[in-house]
Length: 304
Image (cartoon, rainbow, N blue to C red):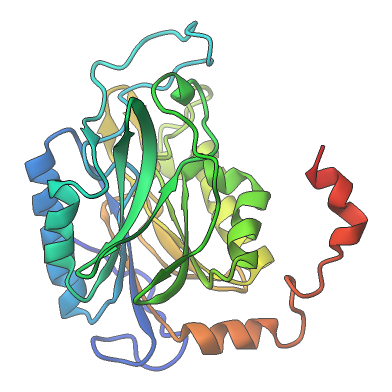
């Protein structure tokens, strides 16, 4: 798979391999049902990440086994059509994740999959490196009938990883400011939001770059990075799967809401090198959004 580097962005120091700061890759790629093909793609991406000196690689939602081929209209079964097939159900400590850990070695990877827990199925983001699984986020917010096929997660918390305190979200989770805020308040300095975010199915734009859902995707990324003053890493599927057309637009966003690197709507990787501690310190020095909160004023709203 070819990669792109349309915006070269050292936030601090040179952006090439071995430079200071954390090397980050946000992936925009198409992943389907074939697990062996998925693992081959992931292996190639990790090879390039290593050559670039990256230590964090964020893959899309459902990068192991693919996403749903359609999105329904509601949670009551009255959606217009059903998926042709469902993603394979995998274990967070299963052979596929162990293979990614072996490939990853010193690189921390965020990978999306359908996770089994007894009889329940979750749309999950697994955070893994050569040291093993560091944590799992189960998608909390479910759009457009996704709840017909997945159980909803019920926890939001940051994860300690070899690259620091990391938060993970999945796709529609980014539309809820409380989700990203909960991770930032739990100490996440980098938040990885993995997606299989499609183009709108109504009032569809011929050019996906002009699609209104792509516009929302980009707005959420910049807003969540800015309001929490974190480094925000957004991956996404691209191309098509079943009746869905994905908007791409993987990116790395700085704590000022500035896009440091982006892929556009086509396949590629947004590569960035960020001195996370220094960048967050600079952003929070004058106005510290987390520290300036007044939770006693709006506590009742959060319990509505």
